[in-house]
Structures are given as C-alpha cells and as structure tokens.
Amino acid sequence: MEKNTKAYYIITAKVHDFEKLKLYGEKAAPLTKKYGGKAIISDKNPENFEGEIQGNLHVVIEFPSKEKALGWYNDNEYAEAKKIRLEASDTISFVLVAGKK
Image (cartoon, rainbow, N blue to C red; front, side, top):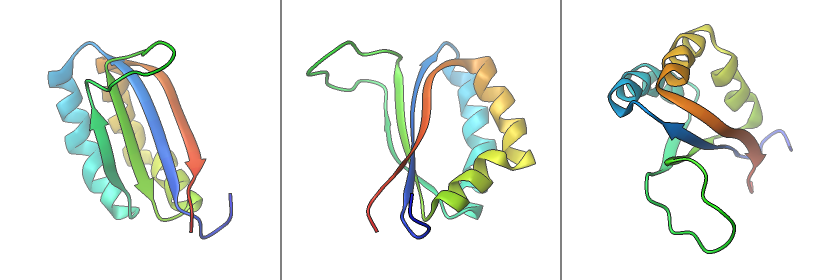
C-alpha cells in the first residue's frame, strides 16, 4: 500500500446480538472519526451473484491512509470496543485493502 493511498477495512460478520452491536458502534464511531475514517457501507442484506454469502453483516470503513487505519485498529480505545464486537458477533473476515489515491 502506498503511503497516501486510502485504505479500507472490509468486514463480514455473523451477528447474533444486534442490540449489543449498537454499543460497539457507539464506542467505535468517535474513534473512527478521530482517525479520519468513516463507514461507507453497512448492509445486512446484500445481493449475491456468485459464491455463497457468509455472515449477516457486511461493512466497509474508509480511512485516509493505511497508517490511520492501523492506528485506529491498534488504539487501546478500539480494543475496548472490539471486545463488545466479538461478544455480539463472529468475525468471518476483517481485511485491510488499498484504494486509489
């Protein structure tokens, strides 16, 4: 990933407690903003064209750079929010990819 390239977390999860996941969102949202990030996609019912849909929640979070994205994920405040997310859901994938400048 180039230094100034936008970065995106693409997350697929099997949520079993959407009410608890709201708490995660309340804790993670201010921190996401602090790192310049924003959730650009959150979909419980995607349309499938190939393969098999896994999970019941698909999210994409955009950050201005890989460094900012990693800073967010490795922040101690996020570790607290992550505990809630892991209690409310099972992670299928949580990947970081590069976008275009």
